[in-house]
Length: 370
Image (cartoon, rainbow, N blue to C red; front, side, top):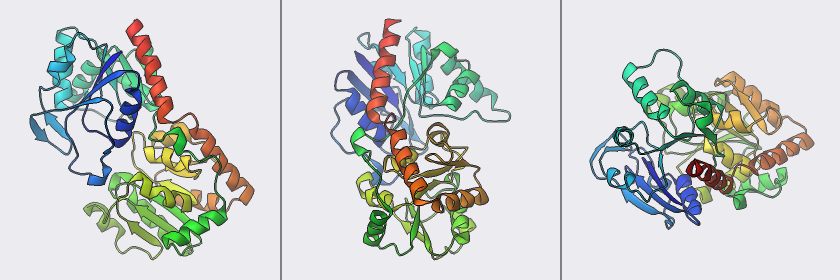
């Protein structure tokens, strides 16, 4: 089976996915850019590639896109069984799709997730999205909101295929949760002096709700530390909002997954106070370490993976809701808290890269049979 992917960037989790997919499929991936201007260099996945990688040449724009015709000499290759378009709304992706439609080349649309936007939409953008999505052979979806997004732009229900989305391997998931004593050991190792720890990992930007978490930290007891990993400083708009940080907030720069392990092990609860995440892979990662997760109703990973008081909590994106959820989890009896840890691990058994690969193999086989 020969599969061609087009996308914007070599995202670390997707590189792992394509490597594993390439064990028994022939995979070529065309990237618009090698790196994003708004990402730390450590974000790159430098592991050897088992798949064939191609980088576009053209006119760069924005943080991670390019205007290019490079994909055209690949998408019309008759030996390709399926073309999977992961950059369907970029200029390059739209050019490519329009030409494939003109020459009756079948294509599949895939994404990490989506939300249906409320209110009026730019008519040109709406028409472009509908043109791309409604004519796709299939639309690969991660969640309910993603399904609704495809349906809004003209996809038929029987053309939508669901797959598990993850950034963690089976081997990454702890076999059993660690005890509070072990968490204390990792806090001491990291130099964290507070008795309990709330962890956040992500960009220090408004969309991620960093200002909300800092506001929450001001209302927490001083013996609860808030660890924020992901940069050296907040974006300009957030910096104005948060002002001087309270003493229980500790900032760490961006780190690679292997560097984050001890932070996850030290954490009592993970918080992603996002205003919008079309998925939120850090939720998978935290749960893979058995950490109960608090996130918002604007995080698709939370909506798909979390059950309230079972393995975490999904709340509104405001400081009062998140504060109440943190206090609720930290105040649970040890046996109930331990059960939440176990439930988090159990929830991840079927949300791995291996499952993601298997889902894609099954979908590809069905589509090629069609």
